[in-house]
Amino acid sequence: MKRQKRIALVNDITGFGRCSVAVELPLISAMKVQACPLPTAILSVHTGFPHHFLDDYTDRMKPYIDSWEQNHLAFDGIATGFLGSAEQIDIVIDFIRRFKQPSTRVMVDPVMGDYGKLYSSYTEEMCVRMRKLLAYADIVTPNLTEACQLLGRPYPAGGRVNERELAGMAKQLADRGPSQVVITGLSEGDEIENYIYEAHRGKMLRQKKIGGDRSGSGDAFAAIVSASLINGDSLEHAVRRAADFISKCLAYAVELDLPWNYGLPFEEYLTELR
Image (cartoon, rainbow, N blue to C red):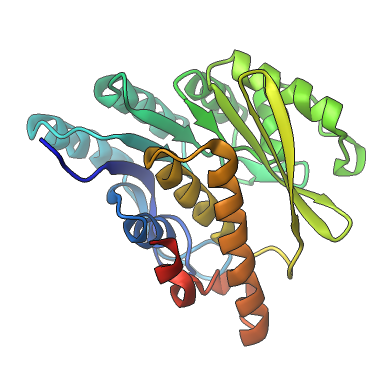
């Protein structure tokens, strides 16, 4: 029976700040794929604001997943985002074991840190569990900091790395499970670069840098790439499509003079994803 494709989104739900599921769901829906949230937490605003309310959903994730299984739900894709504890990572591994079918594509966005440092909430135990989660991924999208953490290697001086080194890192990541690797958000002069790797071959994709860091950019990237791949696009096309869309949103954010923690004003361009 023909049906719409669907992706399970394992991430938090944040009310304001355009990040996590609040970004992923509309972008994936615009690409004609059903988006099904599996919440890890509910926040009033993301942690880039001075005050936030957070409801940790860890204790409710298992019965939530059980309900999905009892209702015989199936997913074409599973996409993981920020996970708040080692226990949540274990829950996600169990979820993937139970729901991954031969045709199900699993994308892991590690969300561990940036600029050579782990996020304050991240522990060594979580790093160890995230390396275990990597084995269940079909595609992984770390930034350079996260790629180094997943491989247990030091962050390069000044965050600078050449294509030969990236190729080696991507191969090592692929050897641990995922057949596709994207090392994201590499900065070189006035360009942002994404290094893609599959079938033992790598390629650097470049985009003009616009503005500074902005909340939710990684979530938008992961959403567009995952939906593109589910729809049958190549990895290169999926990454270029995500980067082009985000560039438009960044330019509009600069035009609106939006604070960084207000996220990407993606609503202006949603219809372009159809």
